[in-house]
Image 1 (tube, rainbow, N blue to C red):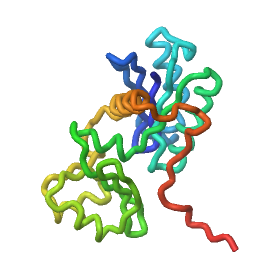
Image 2: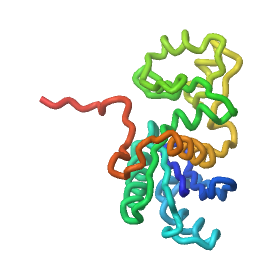
Image 3: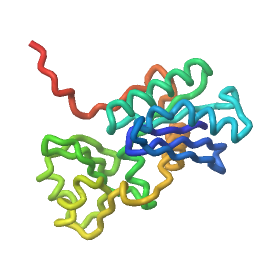
Image 4: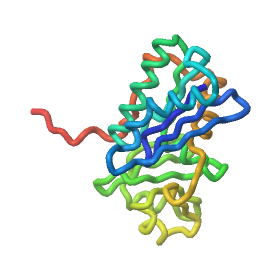
Length: 205
């Protein structure tokens, strides 16, 4: 399985055989946003592993929410690979990935702007008003981002910003993808689509 994520603040590329993992993490630079390195990083990880795309049985990707450009990049590449190679394709929400970084299935709330947060809670996700999230996190362990860390710290001491630690998000993505395949989830590249929880801020007359 080849798994990759360009939706969050770094690019994660992971090659897995179901037992072990080979990982690469790419940061943004002053010249380019990290998602610009997705294809070249995939090529490098294949060369290092002495493999080719034809060895793949599945491709897995983060489908969002997150960076608009990052979501489009990884979903497009995943669809292209799965279609051309005729292999399985699995999409996983960035919120579900982050819910596993501490080994559990924790509450996740990321900045969605407009006084809202993208929330993942026991498999349910959506855009929720910040005041409602304040109530939800009472007594819960929360995973958030840097922009909301200070606000939510008022309501719980059991809080982590995923941007302040080093977590193997590529491996977590691959593990969740294996679980989805085993549970019978769709693996058709044609059904792999970006996850946009909120509608775009556009008014059509």
